[in-house]
Length: 218
Image 1 (cartoon, rainbow, N blue to C red):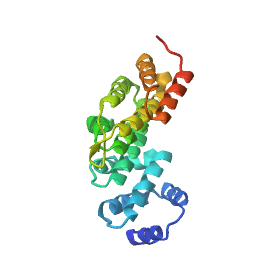
Image 2: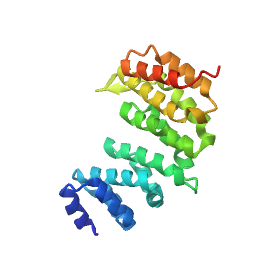
Image 3: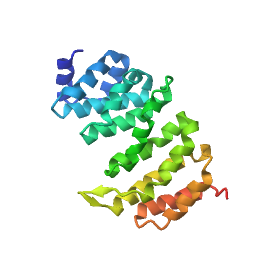
């Protein structure tokens, strides 16, 4: 398929799962999707970044040759493409045999401190994938997540305590994913105990569930 045929098909709003399966069968489509993300002015570029992200969830090795192209999305002015970049990179670490992620590690996890909570939460919520792939990074990643309660996120240009409360819930869900692999279980438990008083009920309930599921090692 060429660019025009892909654009025409996507304009018809096909079943994305079927389209993803087609891309997996013919990975030559991927470079065209990346090119559309960079150059297309219509909303189809978001569909393309989503398709690439979906492929990375199932077959990360197919997207890995385009690692540097995904890295560019982290600096994209459009949030939807940036978020797909965050998610896609978290999937690619499992096949990063060339240790390419190390070069962007600081930039990637620096997004935890970005003013927009959704951007930060995408990094937070998928950090467990990176821990699974790179156990040696677990301590540093955990320490960064433990700092979330002290980070100010903004909503409509104003500091938003509620956004921080939501982000803390994502931290708990991430910790739950890799708790058994962590060397920092005590810190995780203390974090959960502190979140029992979170003014966002959903986060407080997540903390309660976390503590029920995991024995305090202290």
